[in-house]
Image (cartoon, rainbow, N blue to C red; front, side, top):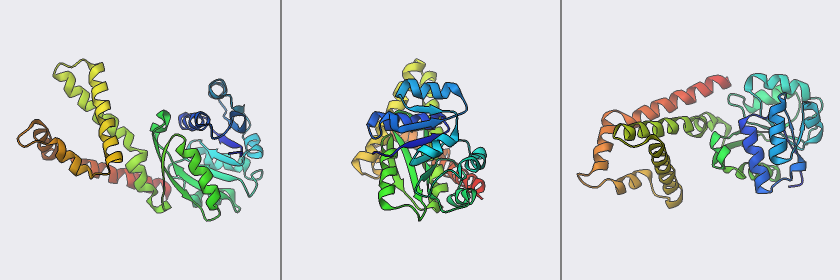
Length: 268
């Protein structure tokens, strides 16, 4: 890709994206420009990836063909007001903030703007992210392909209707936290049974990773894969029965519905 990619804001998600893009060879480091008010963040991406850095958001707006707004949602309007008169009509604006709809961003720019709303998740930090993408009607198919290449450099993507974004937040955006809690609980139980904690975390995490890969790579229904582990009268079905007795699946569904509703409230 010969386009210049700019990042306004250099938090963890931006660093993960920059790392993925550079390591994949998709964009040369000299064609990436990053702005942030914190020198330490800029020094990190410069030393780690060799990208251009600046404290001036306007410099990114003048230079980049694709601009990723990787700042907190509460300062989106402030940043947009700073750059909107500089950004040309052919520049693609990529958002990664929860609660910021395409309309919110269009209204903030106050002019025809190419906008792609995205929602990556934190496993992007290890190259295993899951990102949802929703473009506005001003984005061409070729431009969508460029954005897909960026996000595929650190994980998988799905193009979805924007109305499904709240459901995506609960399914992928927030769900790493649920999985971390599950791993921690599994490890705690193992420690209770005498397993050293470092080994318990490794075993629990690898089991979750392996189970997830089985779902993705076999194409089998999760219920079928679960049944393959549950021997009649065995240890696994004993654990499954206990989880069901305590409302394991219903508690997850309830939590995810609350998460989606909160996301919907933030977007309104």
